[in-house]
View (cartoon, rainbow, N blue to C red):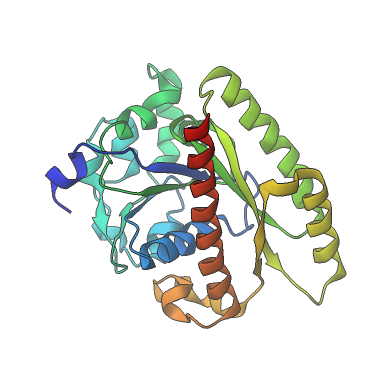
Length: 274
């Protein structure tokens, strides 16, 4: 994508932070496959990989040698975000990659001015060519995740259908509330995505019911099933939707993308009426 296209005037994209301080809940898998599903219906999508492990970058087939300019440089050294954007093998899906350098960013940002607003400042007014920006946050509630929450309009929370996931969700909700009060009053919960659902396990059903009882319409109807094909896809450097479109998890992410778009459509209508 050309510099002019990225910097062109227009409607700002929908920026969604995909966050959960608990690891292994399907956060990166959700970021990659939701982005791919949105791109498949001709939405222009950017993933910003803020996890030092760089799993989203790897899962999109971007080799480490191609990540010379990455999210670290955007956050810490003020490199323009357009210089860090890479094409992926998915048409209409772009990536700001991550490397282990981001571990240092957590330390270096501690003494930086406006440290909570670094990502927001880097993105503001520079991504109008995109319809959606998905930020894949690290599995922690440090400065990287805080930067994502301050830059975003909403938070999507992947939640594994296991008991201990509920405890972490409570802490995350409190963090989102603090960020809304202190840094970003527009921040809202986009939705909670139930992941790794095992229909053979009664606990999965119990957790799903509990989450729906507490959070109601904020929980997406679409449930992402536990599926071996979605676990295999990253080792092939591609999203599950490219690896095996017909597998149940890929089909679920297509449904989730449709639900996200429908949700945003209703949200825009409500804002126009108000």
